Each structure stands twice: as structure tokens, then as C-alpha cells.
Length: 252
Ligand code: C8R
Image (cartoon, rainbow, N blue to C red):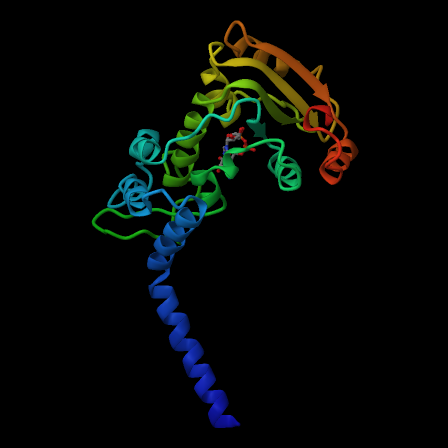
């Protein structure tokens, strides 16, 4: 029994060290596999190469938003009119709902968003590697590979928004429409009246459609896009998530 235990411990240690060394390779394989499963027709290696060139061999505090331009070309976003939902500080509520009902599409339901949601990555000057630990935190620098990625793909997602667009905002924070958020500073400013009919705000967590920050949202909108805001109680969102017989348009 002791010998078997020792062998198991040795195997575990060796395996652990190998996995650690190969973490970057695993990251690449995970990424490529996810892409292939998500969309069989995508040339996954091409997408990976476009992704990697954004941050590999670079100072992880000097990755510009534009570094991901080739990635957007390699994996472009498709417009999904009347179904696109944006959010700010309400990620869990939005996804709690979209996981249950097929009414709306978030950025995390797209190819790039789904594969990279929740992950951290960076490169290093003088290295060909992708690192998943030791990457700079957001407080250290703004031009880091992860934040630049979200900023770039949020812009690309907003660029293709069309029809009636929904945004879920939080009424429980001081400024539901915060000018420093990605939603305010990157997405809303790209909404074009030629493509978008209306922006319908769904205010959750607390009623707050009367908050003054929403005046800034109305003012930021391209002329021609109509605006509406509805305070929606969490119980209604849960009810709608649980009852497929309620039509998407009747949820709120
Ligand atoms: N969007 C932005 N950031 C996203 C994201 C996403 O879809 N998905 C993740 N995981 N993140 P916030 P915000 C990460 O402050 O700034 C799009 C990023 O690390 O609550 O207004 C989406 O389309 C990012 O820094 O909201 C949505 O409409 C934080 O979460 C807005 O932008 C941002 O979370 C949300 O961005």
C-alpha cells in the first residue's frame, strides 16, 4: 500500500509540473478547441494567430486596443437585429436570464466573447509565449491585453448593432450610466441611427429610470434613435426566464 501511495504521489507531482509547464500550450489548445466546437467552419489556427499577434512579445502594459484589429477581421461579428443586449454592472443578471431564454444575444454569446470570458492572458517582451499568470492587474496599467481585448470587441459588437437594441443597467449604483464604463464610452457612442431604431433600457436591481445620468445617455444617442427606460423587478426577470410561454417581447 505504501509503495502504491508513493507511486501515486510521484505521478501526481510529475503530472502537476508538466501541466504547469504546458499551461500556455493548454491555453492555446483550449482556445482553438473552443473555436472549432463553436463554429466548425472557422479557421481556428488563423483566429489564434490573429489573437496571439496582439500581445505576444510585447510589454503587457503596452497593448493598444487597435492591436486586436486583425482579430476582428479574422473573426468578424454578425449583426443579430432586435436581439442584441448590452449591459453595465449587471453581468450576472443578464447572463442568468440569457442562459435560460433564447431571447437575447450578449457579447459573451459570440465566438470571441464566449471563448475568452473569464480568462487572463499576456505576453512578455523577448518571449514567444502566452502567459496566464503574472499578468498585470488592471490597477497597474490600462493598456493591458485583457482590457484592450474587451474594449476592442465591445466596439466591434456595437458597430453591428441593429434594430431594437436592449441595455440592462443597474439601478442599485450611484450612476447607472457611467461615462467611464465600456457601455458608455465605447458602445453607446458607436450606435448608428442608420442601423438602430431604438435603445430600450431595462433597469434592474432597483428602480432608477429617473436617475439624472440617464439624461447623458439620451444625449449621447445618435439623433433618430428612440430611447425608453423601464424599471423591471427581479421577480419578473426570473418569471420570464422560467416560463418559455411568455414571449420575449412581453418579458418587460
Ligand atoms: N463587455 C465589456 N466588458 C466585458 C464583457 C463585455 O461583454 N465581458 C466581460 N467579461 N467583460 P462592467 P462595462 C469584462 O464594468 O464597462 C461589453 C471586462 O473585463 O460591468 O459597461 C458588453 O457588450 C470589462 O472591463 O461594464 C457590455 O455591454 C468588465 O467586464 C459592456 O461592454 C466590464 O464590466 C459592459 O462593459
